[in-house]
Image (cartoon, rainbow, N blue to C red):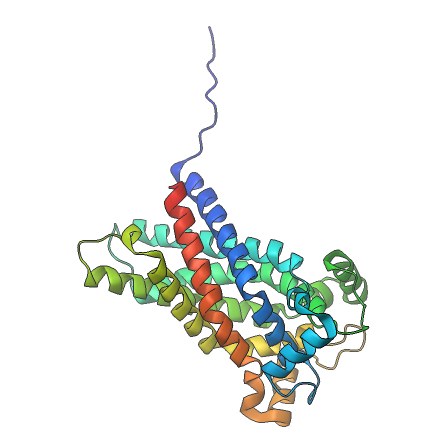
Length: 300
């Protein structure tokens, strides 16, 4: 008697997850290359001591004068690898949740609230990855002039861990990061899907893959505006926590940061760095969605 062993076959679902991960990685890398200079300006405005900069243009001028054009890409290796992984998780979990709802609703169209839920689950899952990656990136981005506390991403991670351990070091700022990612990505993906649905309703003779790349960019850019318009103050709190001293911290937690910002600057303190963030939102997020959708069309 012979026993035939069947080779393991990936299910259609597993195969699609791998495709989503790959498409998200391409989208993430595109996002970093387009958006990193804006992000560096934003982080420096958010975290610098009061009076260091007069605004976004002042950051740009001083950065070019002191560090040259490549200063905008400080700490890029971390986000290039990390954001690629983060966006990969965001898109793959979001697409998985959309398929879950599609099966549960027996093919009926998802509501706006259900699209929000898909993005929120994706954001929560991504938060555990995004928090340490952004912490390391921010520490590197805020090194200026002769300050050479960290030699690079690995050296920075080691030093942060040695000083603060896992939760108070590597995962510092995890609370506001999880909140920002959950609510923010819920808004982000719901906005994008609403715009896609509107386009398909308007032109009934087309399907999703017929929507041109420039419109995908526009929809992605508008989704980026909705994301940052909705959760920007939380990002400021997170950045303050992640640039606080590890050995002698000023803040005990998020509430301590909120109280300090409010006392010193009022409501405007929660919007420091908002201009470069909004300027970044359209090109970075437009490029992300266009890269993801185009990649998926090519590999599906």
